Image (cartoon, rainbow, N blue to C red; front, side, top):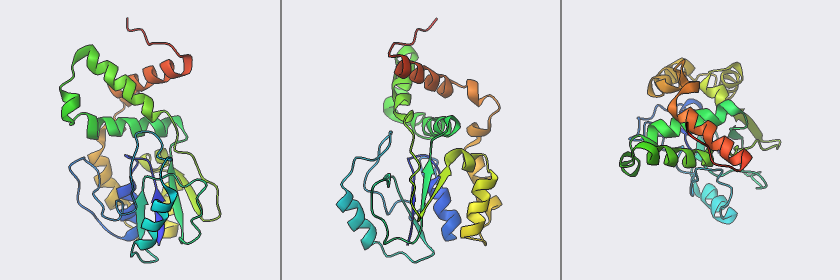
Length: 221
């Protein structure tokens, strides 16, 4: 069995489909609702999900009936965990600025724009809530260095870079990358908007970063 570790809204469903030769339906949250990308999860966090019971995580993985060529997903960050019983592990990282912003913007569009508690908040109160929530997305899902682990930046997937396509072709040569990516891009059009870097969610991210780094409130003019 193989494992994909990823923070939420960083294409875990897409990756499981590509590597396991499945084509899952689209979920209510706008993501790829892959059964495989859910079965290794024991929890979640807007930030990095690294505070969890390791024994519970290992026991769950060992109970999963998955073949050598199947990939299952989890939100657990795998640093400092002995996973030698697995065949291969991919970690979808958010170390770069672009990856962090892509993740936040995707969560913003697919979750926060359709969540009832958010929709009920308006004007400056809404802006404040978005800025505070964006702070949870500043921390990176860091690479993990091990002989069985492959680290892949989320931005490399979003931008369909060679690092991503080469990895998929190496691990599953029969994968139809274009088929999967065409649908994924259609579901996430906002990530490919030429004005993304000046969009409202990106502005909230910049404000959250300023407040966190300088330990002061952002002042709106």
